[in-house]
Image 1: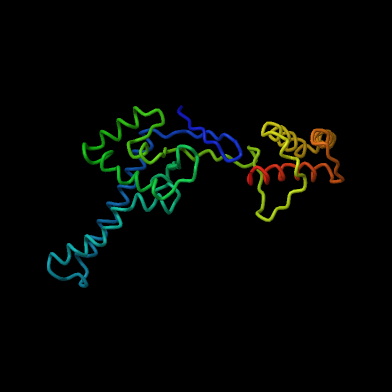
Image 2: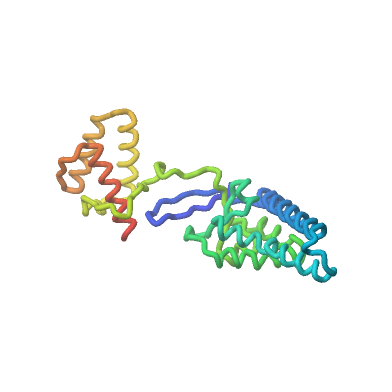
Length: 241
């Protein structure tokens, strides 16, 4: 199983399953059915509506105008839905940047433009071969845009990482918390989560004392409040470094 390791701003590696040919083809077919259905409805409406009851050239002009959104369906969906078309949503797959940075509109535009190479010039053969032969399962458009397609079926909850929800107006308490490493914070959070869940107050006290000794600080905060503050402070400083 091919995976992509994306490194967050706080040096947390999240592994995602790279999507190969099968699921991408299914998503493409779903999107194709949607487009064909849309264009069929538009054709029927124009043919039966008295509003468009004019010469054939006028009807063709209106038909071209109303079917124009279908041409931009893929790129517009990716831009507005964060890397997903309807087909991708159904299969729970998504286009992301290969380096983990936020995907921009021009990434999607490059992918869309190069569909001409991947899908249309020599039939889909180029796109199929590039996905099959690429280590990251990229078609030509993906390689040019710096994107990959990943599975989002398995969500990475924030509780499974060292990340903490920190409000924009949060005010840190312990400035020297940056002496800790990501590994330290991972151990602290794991021990904190398990101890709190099991009401293991003895371990919480030991954990607080260990943190105080390591950072050479004193605090009158209760154990749970103190450790929670340490975790939030660490996240606050690392997010703003």
